[in-house]
Amino acid sequence: MSRITEIFASSEYQDDHAPLWSFVTIKEKIGDGGGNRLWSCNFCEKVVKSSYSRVKAHLLRICGSGIATCPKVTDAYLVDLRRVCEEAENRLKSKNVPLPTDKRTPTPPTLPPKRRKSSNIENAFNIEDRNHLRAEIARMFYSAGLSFHLARNPHFVSSYSFTANCNLSGFLPPSYNTLRTSLLQQERSHIERYYSDNWLNEVPNRVPPHRDDELSSQRNKCLKRYFPHVNVRTKVYEEFSKFSSCAGDFGSFDSIEDRWALDPKTWWVMHGSSTPILQKLALKLLVQPCSSSCYERNWSTYSFIHSLKRNKMDPKRVEDLVFVHSNLRLLSRKEEGYKKGETRLWDINGDAHDPLDDSAGVLEMTNLSLDEPDLEAMLFLDDGNGGEENETIRV
Image 1 (cartoon, rainbow, N blue to C red):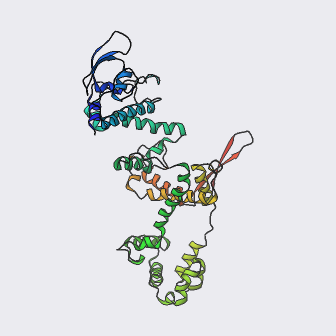
Image 2: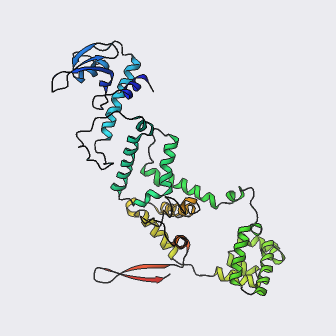
């Protein structure tokens, strides 16, 4: 901080309309009206009776204003004094139409209040700047019609936290075109990393599925539900061990090569006859019809984000947007903050984010809302009278 800035910050008289009064000593005010005062320059100690315009001309070396320029103001001081004036003008511009940040009556826009001297606590925590930033964020919500529960989005919260912690002076948010092009492609590439073989192989302690404790325990639970009788389940265990260890027919060259060449259903038909119980279970799962509700849900997701006509996005960008949106929600549900705290259930619970009695049930429904085809879909049909008729059907 320069000496000029220190003088301005410590001055008892601070007014953004006339910031240079802080660099002279006011001896007395002349008369009841007007702005004339008797003052002495803090640099050259010259005593003058005038208004603020001549104080400015004296300190900023403005010739032809009816007053001599200050000989003690060096070039370095002049740069700092001009910066003080510029910062004061910028503060006035940014506060022309402020949002009320408390319950007091707001000052009319044409008569901004004089800047009072700040306390040490206010200076330490930048209380005035914090309140102004909150007002700007609120204005963004109100003007764009954004849902209030966006404030609980973890990415919204972390973006401001990151900016504050890194002190990114002069940072500007990404533009309209950047959001819909390069940043969208960058985020898709980032998410696809979690589905790649390279990412899986990065884990040093990665083990095969049959040695993974979590996978093994969940698989055994599934088989117990499908095969409640112990004798049958024992045969299934034997068959699965052959499949998992590539024993018997599963270890043949054709069986291993066809895993990459054939679709799963065809592969089990061709190579699963040595394990009839396991083959029957696999085919039962693989031949289930595919519901169109998943695709419809993708399009409704995009419609929820923005109108295709409004943004004029080509199909590839639409696909990227749906992909990124759905996977960011999935990934966020693995975070601890999704189950508790301010960001709890941020993507499904709207403004009603008070603690719920049936938390487990709600969390189960959040999973269904993304990837479970067996859901009830609500259709809104025209009843012919200008209204809507609700019909619930299973898809």
